[in-house]
Amino acid sequence: MMLTLEQDHLSRLREQAGRGLAPSQMLRDLLSRINPEEPRSPVLAWYLMHAFGLEQHQVAAVFGWDPNGTGPLDDARLDELLARHIPAKVGG
Amino acid sequence: MSGPTLVVLPPAGVVACEPDIQAATSTVFLLRNRRKPGNFIMASVGVQTGNFSYHVQNLPKDGTGCPGRWLVQLAWEHFLRQGCAIAGIRGEWIFGDNLDQVNALTQRGGMSVEDAARQTWSAARAAERGMRTLAVLAADGTPGQYRSIDVLFTP
Image (cartoon, rainbow over all chains, first blue to last red; front, top):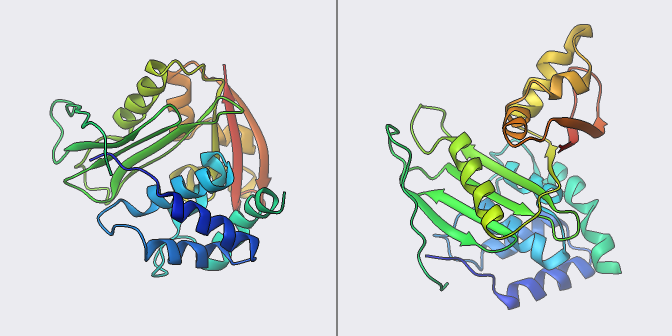
């Protein structure tokens, strides 16, 4: 089955970033809305790339993060790495 | 969720590799292994830069699953079929095998970060595609304890 991105989720990500929500919070919220059968980290990365016009290497942290805290990157490190790229795209 | 189902056959001799292409657009390629949740590749080509980026994973490392080298080749071929002119291969190593290898090779006065980066698994994949020139764009940390390394491989 081919995956597609939901426009509502993309808009929500942009709105959350505009409000200054931490990337880890944005991703947890997104996870609660997507099909749990979908591959988690690739789908999160794809949404971030599309929502903010980023290249994949800029969202590489997503692949090392687990919402349960079991990945090599914790929330603070994920937020630090993603915040380098996300705010400038939203604030314009 | 929609679109046609693309089929790709696994390489001969591998165990527990059932590839399922889940996205294959002009900018994103995603394939996961139905038989092993920790085995997938996501790859993309930057619209502005033409740089190929990927994350490939085959966990646990138990000798089963779709081989990473084969997955990278599938993604690369996909973008070539899409007509992409790939300018380089971009990596941001912030965890995982490439970063671990660089740290192991640079500790205690070992190699330079550039020489160490040339010894990584991803450098070998880049070289296979003619991308043999390495630029370390940024390195956060000190030898043996790098926290992140940004690299670009070009022809």
